[in-house]
Amino acid sequence: MREAASAIGAETIDRETELDRQFAEGKAEPATVARLTAAIGALQAELRAVHLNAHIAQRALLSTEQIAHYDMLRGYAGGGGATHDGHRH
Image (cartoon, rainbow, N blue to C red):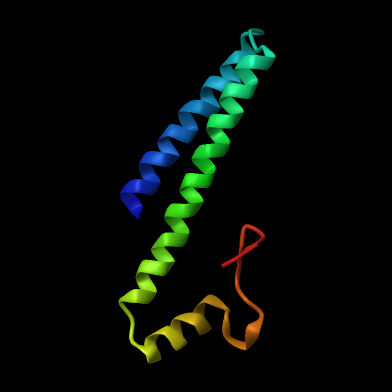
């Protein structure tokens, strides 16, 4: 997960930097903004999927007792569910 997340994060920063540069240089145009924000959104979605899939992979390695403890640590015990950046998972 760390390698995939790092690569996606670096690409996201590159696109964000490119978008900032367009505005700083006064060259931002609607088509460029649309292209870059779409790319940034896709990268953010990919990063979220990597993160959530790591949780799925982790659970596959655990015993029933370990899963119960993992769920408690993640805040899932009691049905409340954990949140991360405003999202439940």
